[in-house]
Length: 463
Ligand code: FAD
Image (cartoon, rainbow, N blue to C red; front, side, top):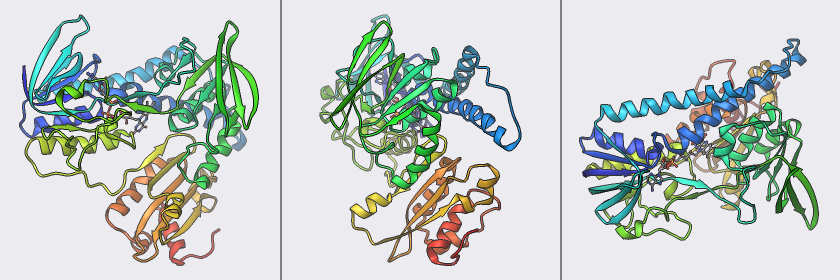
């Protein structure tokens, strides 16, 4: 078999690259070890987590409406049906991808790929049979996998995000190890489904790296939904016993033990760069497994490109798809480069936390000459009508040019609202551009315009 463009891995990076290269006229082969396309994002990441988070949101909102005069009964959870619905969402998307591959005559080869030379990849199928594929250009999109902690024993009650999304049962007591985005999203789901959830985080805040004022409303609400959020706390030992997993916590030298039915380990993801024998192709990979690339997504070997989680942070699907387009275009002889100013990040928790551009913490650390304004959602009619006044929209502007350099939003729907901020930064918009843009009323999107006006001093007091 020969490919003009070979793509290794069929996640958001891989399938996007394969489809773009095929659209540009290349003969494309897409190698994927799983029997379905879509990678982590569609099968065990973005999509199933959002389906379950939707269920969690409905449960929470229904219970909160009692305070506003509309009461529902306790939720009756049919786990099998919920799982089936989540799986049907995935199946629709992965089925759609299979159709799109066929339409474009992209040949999908199922099996585990490993480079044999700078122009060949060996693919081992599940039955052990091997195929060698030669290629002119290759795009590596082999993604990442969850980090494992060496001191945590192999036990079926210890799960990663994939295990959590499988929704086998609703453990009575669940420990979520890691207060990052994936851990918090899963904690939100299981708490709504009825688990007593404890979240443990080594750092002094959840979503380390995000501004503290943005995370505070999430912390406050989450604290009412889960049993405990332990910050600055380390898990030092896990002992599997018949009555559960005995966990030792260490907070500032003080240790204590608790017992859980399940532990979800969500302490980050590591790239798969060391699992595909790239050294046989002469491609450099660092000790963590990342492949370094230039703006055209080329590795140190000119005809081999890499994209997505395997090339670095942030490990996000929308970064992978944009890099994919660039790699495919360059591989097909077009002029293209990855030139995004900013990549938005979102925690799809409740409330959502979304940020784009520099954070205030980064701006201070870098000594940037910046100014900020924070619009509290308590002054937004729409937020009040939703019964959710805890949100904030924070804008950061460069003091010299008055251009927008960063936005952080916390509140329901923040993940959708952040797109306008990303566009404004990409377009070089300044405070006046944003303030003079008419936003529909009453919407949460108004908070961005109003925050810009607060920064400009056009409005000075809030309701
Ligand atoms: P992947 O999606 O990891 O795909 C890599 C593919 O390569 C896989 O299909 C794998 O089977 C295949 N592969 C690997 N090695 C080989 C090999 N040797 N041979 C053949 N095939 C191979 N991102 C967001 O932007 N938004 C979200 O809401 C979001 N939610 C997430 C929730 C969870 C629980 C998780 C785990 C991740 C989430 N992410 C989210 C991150 C997102 O899933 C990844 O950033 C994205 O999938 C990366 O795409 P990729 O193409 O680089 O790799």
